[in-house]
Image (cartoon, rainbow, N blue to C red; front, side, top):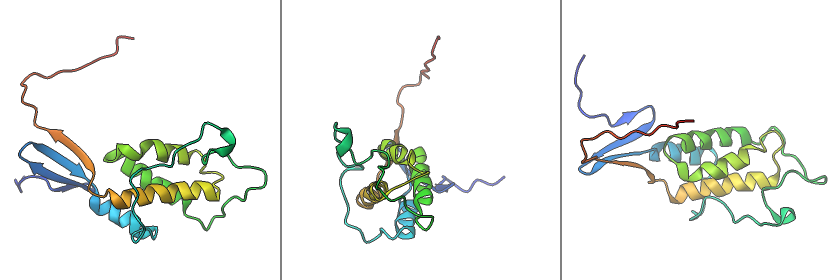
Length: 149
C-alpha cells in the first residue's frame, strides 16, 4: 500500500477538504450531463420544479390524457431520468422529489413530462456548485438512533 494523500476524486465524487469539514459535489458530472442532453447553453433557473396546482386538470405532472401524444423511443427520457437519479442519490437531494415524480411516467412520457426534465436540467445549470458539506464534529461522542419498532 502507498499513501498518496487525501482523496480528491472517488467514483465520480469530487471531494474538497476544507478547514471546517469536507465538501462533496459532482460539478464535473453535472456539466457532462448538461452537455450530453444539449442543455449546457440553457438559461439557468432557481427552482428544481414548477409550481404544482391543486387542481388535477391543471397539474403539469398529471398522467397522460386521451388526446396527448406519447413520446417515441427517439427521446432520451429514460437516460435523462437515470442521470438525474444518480445525481439525486449521491450529492443532490434537492432534486430528488422532482426526479422521482417524473420517473413515474417513464413508460409513457409526454411533452409535459419532458419539459419537467428540462426544467430540472436548467436548475442544475444554475446550481452546478451545490453539494453536501460534512462539518468537522467537535464532539468526541458518537450518537446513534434506532427504531424500537
